[in-house]
Amino acid sequence: MTKRGYHHGNLRQALVDSALSLIEQRGPTGFTLSEAAKRAGVTPAAVYRHFEGREDLIAEAARQGYEIFADLMQYAYDKGQPSALAAFEATGRAYLAFARKYPGHYIAMFESGISVNRTPELAAVSARARGVLERAATDLSRHIAPDRRPPASMVSAHIWAMSHGVVELFARNSPGTASPFSPEDLLESGIGIYLRGLGLIAPDG
Image (cartoon, rainbow, N blue to C red; front, side, top):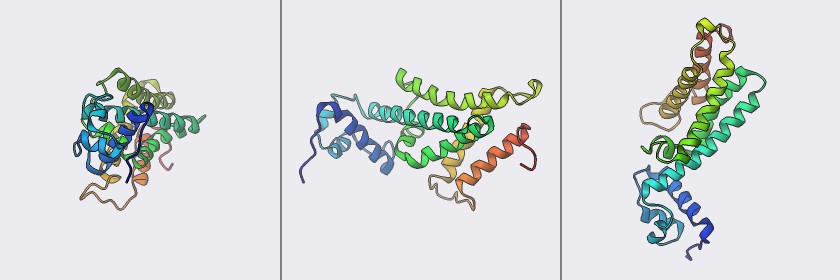
């Protein structure tokens, strides 16, 4: 079988794509740079023209994942307009949808141990993703009386944590964590209970 050839401009992305496939199959520590190079059809030496090591390669996969994630969150937020409630709920569902559709990116972002502060670019796009959810929480919080209003950053952190927990426990085939309910139903009902507690939807809503 002839190895694929890559021009200088797309070798870097070919290596990222190879890493994403390996991350999905084996986890972030289950492959070597040599394996990523072989899958991309190049020599191991070629990797070091673009990445200092495996963590550098995974960090780029995470950065690209956050770009996709932030765009999906923004799309969900925009689609829910002009309803602050619909926009907020949509951003929560977008988290689960992203984890399902982009498992390699998700693992690189959240399970690899790579800090979002590893590079300025990674930190910036991570902040952009968080900012969408916080903006949705800010819109929704305006409907709560000032004396009962939690910080929007706290509301968004709660929903992020709930979404992440549902993904980790029930949407990634974790052993021993089967649920009689779908991850979508778990997340939707959890968000509903949370919002009822804040008085944002009716008790029978």
